Image 1 (cartoon, rainbow, N blue to C red):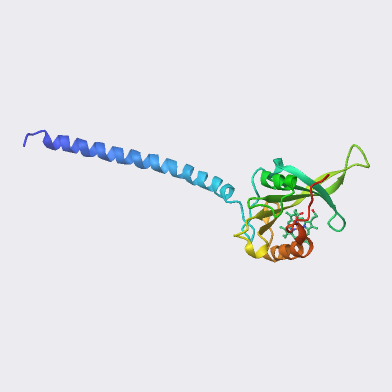
Image 2 (image 1 turned 135 degrees about the horizontal axis):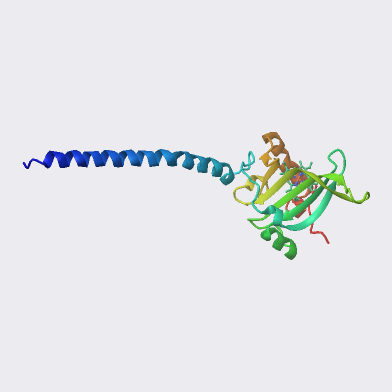
Length: 185
Ligand code: HEC
């Protein structure tokens, strides 16, 4: 044993403790950031899905092509536009029925509003609902291959409302693969 050996040991303990303390400080500084990142991205990654069907609002639908506008009389009294993804547009243009898997149709709706610049013109007011139909013939075999979602303020409405979708589309739009909207001329 040389006389300076214990001193070396003490020094290396000190270094180890300092490094450990440093690592702890770095870790503790990072944790809040990691948590805030997880919280910020969490809701965005899994936007809330509709009950029964698990349908979500498709990203980018506001840039989708128009299939047809529509109006709804009182009491809802709304302006509407049905838009579709590329699969939907291709199916409409070729007249292909049934719609292929991957078809997504979105019905946008707004309160009717008088143009502030021109009294006889009606323009979209506040957005009311976003309604979605997704074609997946295996997943939604029990409902004609369609999954449904109705969203108000970005949140899906309750299960009771989702129970109504298939019944009406099935009863009234069967000859068109349960889709009411036809391509606007
Ligand atoms: C009482 C009948 C009825 C019920 C219930 C109903 N719809 Fe519809 N739906 C229609 C009609 C009529 C249209 C076409 C006219 C329009 O755009 O308003 C339509 C259109 C749509 C469209 C555009 C594609 C198409 O078929 O024309 C989507 C998407 C849609 N509905 C989703 C839903 C969802 C989701 C529900 C349930 C939350 C639902 N619908 C419940 C009658 C109904």
